[in-house]
Image (cartoon, rainbow, N blue to C red; front, side):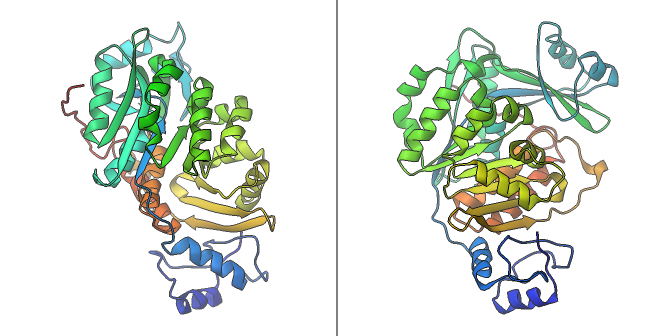
Length: 403
């Protein structure tokens, strides 16, 4: 990583690229691998790459479909006794078993319980649609599966309310997926019952294929690769053949570790790969090294292809980068620093990273610069931190629609 100094600021001012909301200083980084000197000055070639990352250069993407879990979040403040009883881990999702399924009964009996839609893809799509202001110009759809119960209506209604088109299979064999979100001492713990999400079948997808294919981009939730791999693979390959955009979210270190071959297979044909810093370290198998080396390792693990890597670094902002396979080096690493939020202002981290990607994609679909994408992603994520669940409202309420 390289750093700005006074000279580089003058170069950017001369090029009229000084579009950033915060001033540069020697501690802020915005760099790439092919620089000319150790003082932090970019070569002419690299300045061109930086310029491309700032100006608007892409065409609009008018439609996107996401594939993932249709989950309902049940959120409540709990005691440490609950955390220990169910052996929950901070900021990690644990799946229920016969001994832990009673957690939902306990959460539902809490004095204050909030119910919000959840699941990575569903969060991303709802945020994306809201950031696009439910503009009829853009079409956002969700492919998933719900159970034959009351929660299917809540899932459906929450998507419609946000302007997302639901393409939902109804499974009569299982209940709608749900997740107990337990907040204790400003930390968030998750226990999920996958339920109906895993039951989406190839025949349903085949019946909806024409509607699915009528989108310009597809988003694949990394969690789905556990039990919907063939469906995800076939859809990604179809979009790839048609030269449409494919986006993969890494989602979880567990998925990367135990389903690594599946992750790589989808990543090889993906145009955008999204994850957080812990997931990037797991995917690269590098820890405690500078971000440039992590990015290089991830790109080199994959088949040569033009792609964008976006890594969210929590409250410290986010990075995005491209790799030049012909020259075997990074074209650039762009970093956006997130405005600092006081810990006492944070209500709930649920959907925080999903909200970042939803905000990022809202600018990306408009064809705006990567800088604007990172900026909107961070601003959106920071809003979500002030609310319960992945919502823009302090007190989330459902509107009523009919399926």
